[in-house]
Amino acid sequence: MPRNGNHGAPHDAAMDYLSDRIEERPPASSSMRWGFVLTWFMRVLAIVWIMKGLSSWSVILGIWTPIGQFEARSTGYQATIIYFALIDLIAAVGLWMASTWGGIMWLLAVMSHLILAAFFPSILSSGLMTFVFFLTLVAVYVAVSWLAAQEE
Image (cartoon, rainbow, N blue to C red; front, side, top):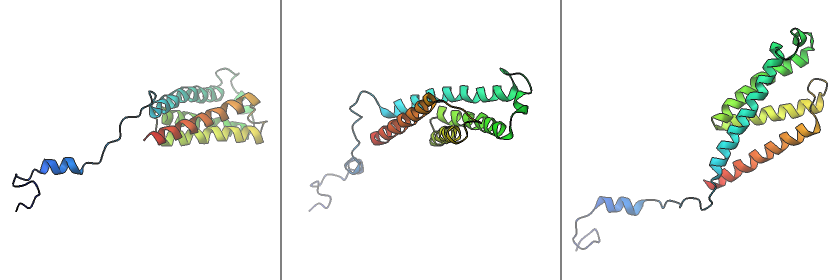
């Protein structure tokens, strides 16, 4: 009586390999893959945040303002501009790489901007449209990230 259950035929290890494989999921049925959408959304945000970071550097360097105006401002204003000159560009690099830390740094930068604008309008003034725009970007980012995670 054969032990391998195939009635005397030699045992094939490749068949065991095939039978032990975990079934692969079929590709997503939707024509739009959310991971792809998330990557390109992050890249578009990266371009916008590079421009935002460079605009902070232009204030520091006095490119569009008279030289010396930055130094004449309050220490709180200077610290805020320097903070955004750094964090916006760091977030932009992370967003362009579509990394998790990039999204977190971007959320930190956006929330910092919103909180500073709300509580210290003399240092960082932002209108209602800026608030709505930033909150919309955050909502879209969270929604697309969630959809991309559900896709996996």
